[in-house]
Length: 511
Image (cartoon, rainbow, N blue to C red; front, side, top):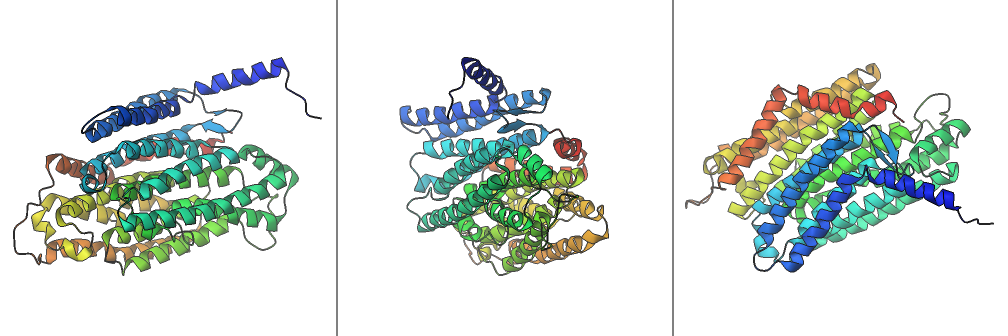
């Protein structure tokens, strides 16, 4: 018979919630910013897009102060274990807020919004909502919270992808994204239901404890892991859950393409690491798998398939955004390499590579926007002669592409070096994975360098002179991103230390 909680229990629940709210300040602040942008959009008259963009930028910057304050708080569980505050979560809070700021900046530079969209109020509000959802993804420690945060990110991403309502490519991309997202979410929820059936728990820490104490059916566990990986794999864009990526990246507004390729992918990896590292067993006496598979083996398969497929198919792409989409699939494979290591160094390598990917991918997409503003095209052939017409943009794009390949002296080289080092540190069994990563990186060199080849070694077919100057502010941002990509490639210790600090959750077992 159901019994109502006593007054003392209710007071205890309220006290616990009040205590948790005090550690939820950045998320509350961003929620207020979300509502403020909607109010400004409703109240402000005339040309309000600049006001909205500046408010979004300053508001996101202000949230960094509240996130910094959380460094002085101990790692702990919030809201009855559904949410956690730790170094790992703080890393991604910084990551997502900065990603949102860059997305706002490159949106301000994209002239296509001036012709396609009248009011930007909903757009900037949705970016803030997506930042909130991704922060919650990285901090979720309960399957219900995982699902809710993923759906918040997914729904906002669907809308932002189709934000150019009069553009058929944008509408098609949004529809495909919605269909693939709905299927993957359904599969993930079914996997969650199997885990709940095995353990009668939704908290990932309690799930781990139940599985360790009472064991599990190996076939059922591998099925549940596969279904959950379908949901996470869709978020990170790994093979075979990648089918949405090329069309969505090509059809979405370019700032959203960059945002999805960096921030949404990072949110998927944060969730994947927290869930599988903590909840699902991966070795020891408890682990008994009669079919020779576990979730680590599944990740190895996904990683190898993503690296090979993404790099090989990119060879035939003529649209630069589509080329970068297949490149993003390949980079999901590289990131999975360091996750399968299952130690603090592997986690550090993953976080460091995400930082490098942040700089080089946002930089590449920003320049793609500037070039599209001047040429009206994203086709590779229309990049001819840009080395002379846009010298700084062409030089910076070359640096970002070299970093994406993983060549010195860029940050991307250090990122891949750390991933391969983490693999080799685990012994000879992982050497073949490192070799596949190196060989596929060599393949990527060909299609990445097609862009500088067109910019520097082929003449533009147009004889008339055009004004190709992207503007002073754009050139300053280009120079800053290019400088950081090279500077941290030479002096990478601060980023490495920050990644190491953020990966302490797995090394110190704070749970």
